[in-house]
Image (cartoon, rainbow, N blue to C red; front, side, top):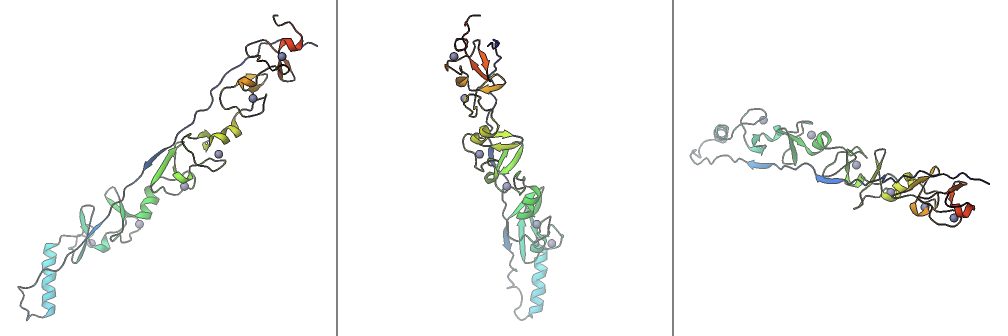
Length: 244
Ligand SMILES: [Zn+2]
Ligand SMILES: [Zn+2]
Ligand SMILES: [Zn+2]
Ligand SMILES: [Zn+2]
Ligand SMILES: [Zn+2]
Ligand SMILES: [Zn+2]
């Protein structure tokens, strides 16, 4: 009836620290201003002149006064789009990617070029690591990736993270409860997850409070103990003399 006395090694590990995602706003919206250039008044023209002559005269005046289109370099008559500090024919102020007229719609500017909203987001917005869609406004940066705020959630239960932040495993975020449920070592005394410090002994892990004599439940930490069926038993309960 002899169980060998052994001083078991124990180590304490603080093995999990939560990460915190950060939020920021991404990209700004630019709006266009439209100006309607009216033909100049024609009171110097003799009202006896025909319409044709009057129209030609107006065009002549317009071409000398209204600047040129930044896209085609031709004079602008009638409606002018003013955007990016330049003037454009409405039909020439177009998305740099799909060439659709931007008109007075919202557009985004990148390197001096205008883009329609969908193209800008598709081309330049950060991608969500969950759905791969472009991120239009609020963006969570975590795990060296970007995420829609509503798509950054626990990989196990789907809940978004609050103040506690999240825990990471294999590049996926987990809430505290699921993380410990799934990945934390289980205490060999009570079988529940170990959230913080633990004792490694008898080839398993233990809550410090659970590492006690199997028979009398007194702590055996830091003392000599016997191992009985994987549990510690103090020398008193085994019937051995406590001091060597
Ligand atoms: Zn033009
Ligand atoms: Zn476009
Ligand atoms: Zn997403
Ligand atoms: Zn969860
Ligand atoms: Zn325990
Ligand atoms: Zn005991």
